[in-house]
Image (cartoon, rainbow, N blue to C red; front, side):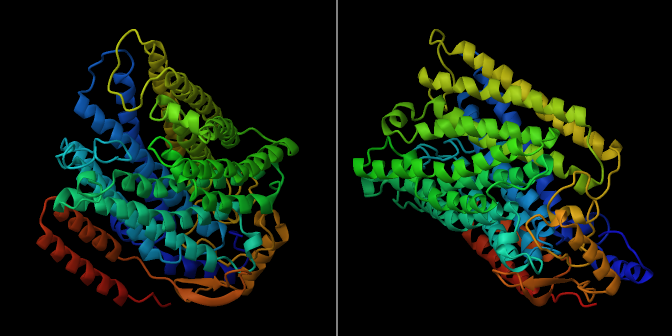
Length: 634
């Protein structure tokens, strides 16, 4: 489709290049509304936070490598392991999956030219970045959060955490939630309204179903977290008593509100990995995904049922037997849609002709770790067992097999898979496979011994331990494994960084992929497609006649939409042609609004509500300017 067959087609492409051209240099990046540039900014920001979280993890593991270590002080240890958890969940896994992969790929996969709300998309990134810097400012000042990533009260109350660490946590996550909510709404509208004409819901790639499910989960789950954090700040700053038993409050209220968010959050983290897997597996097995409709439904059901299992995090707090049994049943039922997807992946691989390139290896590793993490997850549905291992390292093992093994491995596979599309170059395959095996071995050595330590009674969030408990050898193995894991991740980074400069150049579709992003050039132009692509199935790139028709349409000038920043809108169910939308140009407004909003949270943190109100007024002024900017005409 990227080939220009006639002078008239070349003229149209040149006009699109001129209309959609970004501002040059740094200004272009600061003002961009291009979903691909925003996706890349999400990628590098999330990777920077991943590096910070990885260093924190290595500090924790070094502290626990042997009994009675003093690598970190008790206070520093509490801040480091808490910030590690917050970083990996809120500043790395979610932003890199939804913000980076989702932003860059989803409009390309559905044949759109941008997200539905490009300026709001840019705003989401700048708010995310500001929230991360806000949280890390507290750690840099020695006031990082220190009550664990789920900050249970009363430990997080003013009485037990009198400094500002918990305030950095609470206000930072409220700030972060604004970005996630805006991003989720943008994905929902984009998926429902900007699919290329012909891409009915039954022809939409499974990757898009995963991100649709994630977006709905964020929209419905984040309000519970935000409410919990607002109550916490009211308790800490203004003397309210939402969580104070002595004044009629209840600390379990925090647990309920947090886990109403926290368990759907697990699927927010894992579902993008499912979507990446369903993109990579068909490409490298040369066959369509087995049970496509059931996999799509299962992705939605995982989120839906996930809202009904939060209490299995609270089996040890003294709830009634009837309540715990009901939630234990829901915790078992949610295995069904997860198993449907698992069997579909395995069956597709076994019945296809798999080519075990680096991206597929990461997906194989993901399947292995997802099975391990899933089996231990089912064990938590057994109430007596859950009560026995609550707050032990067994829980840490399960959580990391799911979050790192099952969520991060597909992300790494996706980095390799879409690297040629984003850069136009190919990575080194031998280094890619070597990086997988080193990372796989490091992951096993780091997290699997935690199961044994948990059964031996080692509690989570412990600063140190006495000699003679039988924990030293396994902790040393975990620490050595963590450094091996770090080496594997470093190999990934070096491979991709060197390949960015020296990798051999490749065409638009080096893998023979099945989804639309492979139809455009590598890297894609700012407008994505010179002509809005034709779609006849969920495997658009394997419909060769459709791609040939795209080239003929470009020659004829059909569906080129060269009158300005234009993209088509289609109907929700059948993706029938509806209207042409004008998209906004690049703008300073998103960055200015994010900076103003950041100032509001800083003023609230330092106790200057009047100044915070002034910055709220500034936010309103920026919004007025925002809505006065009209989309560009031809």
